[in-house]
View 1: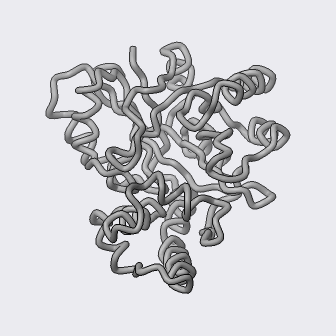
View 2: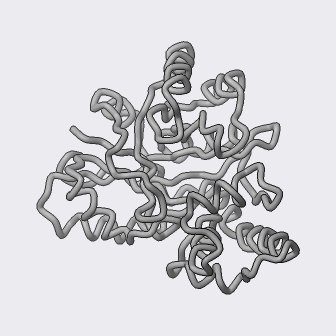
View 3: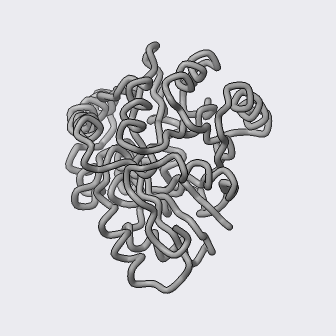
Length: 287
């Protein structure tokens, strides 16, 4: 089985609609795909509708990528798979994060304008799909559209990474609380790309141990942003802490080089994760 547990649609910062993502998953010969847009469930209904219209043996795992922050203020992302969308506290935390992204984006743009960049909030809005969660990738797309950079990767490398002089944070839940919220909503919690140092600072193994104590289920180990040493170190840490390990594409459509299925989760690990969830069911032919 080919299982990819981390993808994005244009309900956040991907370029494919949820329907297009489902069809792309079929074309990539995936058996299981998780839709995990940033801080939103907005794409769930469309993805489920697209799945009902195909005959291919594909299962859809509905999830979310939750913005979190460590006690030291380090930004990190927590995948919450199969959470109950009706869970009030989790939904409120996600909404607070979405609402804070607008003033945050305006502050980043102001910093760039102060250094002479020809970019405006309306330029960024033009890159948003209806109802999408606003994020830095939309600013990157606006910079591409204005001819300031050639692609998203260069935009992030030069201007939009977490340690950039233009960086401005937005509301993000305390990571320990984020894990607890995901678990209380019946989901499974996976720390996304925990060793992606090129994105900015990463948390310590000691903090990951605290996340494990809070109920963390797994570390996303096999990810494009992890080199071989990082993967080896994360596997050893996961074994020490009793955590599962996953692999995923973190697919964003044409916005990033990541390809669906380029990293995968083993069926054995997926079975364990699925057995721990009670929030919302898997739908499709491999459920």
